[in-house]
Length: 472
Ligand code: SF4
Ligand code: SF4
Image: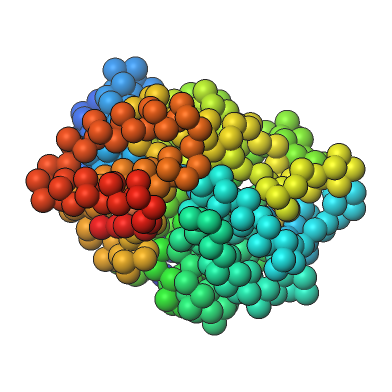
């Protein structure tokens, strides 16, 4: 039944294969010889199979777990250095026809304020985001063929790319909308989107159907096969995610990696990113109603095991998580974080009155983008506003092959420094400017190629003189 190359959801995410994997992992969680072999394989930085990764996830030998964390940190450093890519979500509309039990935008919620931004309102939101310093957005919209048809999404993307306020520009628009047709994915590709993001929520079919009792999202196969259709529509950067807390985390972990293996087997390219959201409190949603919440410790183990299993896939954590939790996970594998986020429709340009709130979930990390940039720098990370790959056509397998040969670091590091310089020239507070300039000076020395170093120095000077948008 399990067939990694099958185009049927129930065959590439075979329930039996997930259960067999969990059984195998439980039987081997104390098998030191096997765990050592898996760790040796992981050290080669070519990734792990879902079975191998799940054994590591299950392992409860303290010494081996410490090795897993150490290796995750090392792989993070080797592939991503100390760079952290910044982004912000932009909610276009919270009209939705689905009945998801964990999301306040579900159709039956009659008291949440329903909003849909007009193109004029989108402009205001984008200007507010540009004025914070953002260059990379993730668009969010509920599923509603009447209120949020594909034409609305396409028009909104066009509007977003067209706005150039002062030195600002949104240079990459990632899109998180409901599963759709190959034809619509082609339209999104033609509109110039970066990554198409779709969270699976849960891979467990029975739970999935219960959690999505009504609406088009109820169809497990249509949802699970969406990434294949996106690829067929020409989108070669896709972003995965599960909502931890809905089902047993072990199940989600094994299935998520099976999904990645499926994409690799069929299209030769795995997920561009993996997001790891945990269920949060929201308007009419109480996370305590769900039995499968995970502790910070398990969460950290999941992130570390994913890091060593798919080293070339970016990992994203949002402001759902607290400062403390984000700080811990950055070391273990996270490469992208959001900052200054609003999870309401129209929340950037204007504060929402209390009786018109439209958030999708409570934000835990409420700091401003400048505070987050400052915090990252003080921990010796380089906040990066880079969007170069997509704009240079380095997407899909081209991106992955560069990434797998670790060549991408030769672009990322100088691009991070140049985009950080842009950020501090245009948007940073005095303190952030000071610490960032010191960091940039120090980090220039870590560019191995003398010629590249020279070019970066010249470009940094040009940025100080008002020229923008340099990239490798
Ligand atoms: S999770 Fe998405 S599809 Fe489900 S109710 Fe919320 S916005 Fe709608
Ligand atoms: S160079 Fe490419 S991979 Fe590196 S940070 Fe920029 S966009 Fe990402």
